[in-house]
Image (cartoon, rainbow, N blue to C red):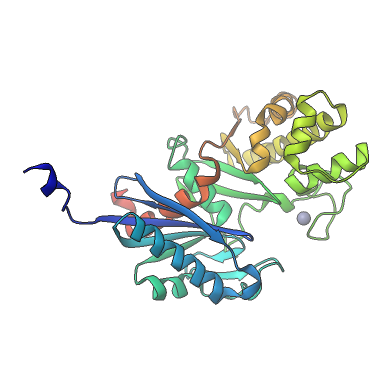
Length: 317
Ligand SMILES: [Zn+2]
């Protein structure tokens, strides 16, 4: 066979992973071996309702398949909000997503794309993405995502724990970390110290001036600003305490920390390691808290892993 004939091979089969957030819908298309064939993103029409979001996500999936000259065979979605993972419908969502709560996302996407679709909460997808990569050996693991807010997810014996309300792992809104009011209206939640939003607010309340984003506060800390350093130390300590509680309760030897704030691992790590020494699980469990490895691709890659798992019998994985 000469080179020209090789070029007429059948189109590859592609699985798309879609990461639906409040401002952006990002997608990755992979082949059967997990090789990335195409990637892209579109703005999220979050204020226009569920159907507009599904249209945008489906359009992105078709575009990626077209660019890769691949036949789309399945789609996985990681979406913001509380997700019913059995039906792929959105159970609850923040007010920035119009018409999102109650929207049958999996069903609507499946009818637009004519392929099997599975939908996970985005933080669950993030953790699945991490354990489908460098953390493949982890069977019992906590995931924490430090983004605009703080989300959590738990894998036990290799499987995501969803809970009867689809809300397992929501560690960002557990109390006792501060006396500050949280975005949810309650007081003292982990999120009040460890989210990107909170890091900007905590720095402004200490140092005065305009509210900066977490990256700008990180740069100040690296240049020796004591207030910025203190804000990251408080975030790191709170994250480590939350991980120690979850690890103690569920016997989890590993916690993986991702999201934009975790890019400042150099600033979080000293307080995390110190807290692991002072507040280690009394069981003697050697808890390790380590950074995520797949960056902003983790949610889309985890969404792909979720639909792969849904289509593969457990014994065959
Ligand atoms: Zn809260």
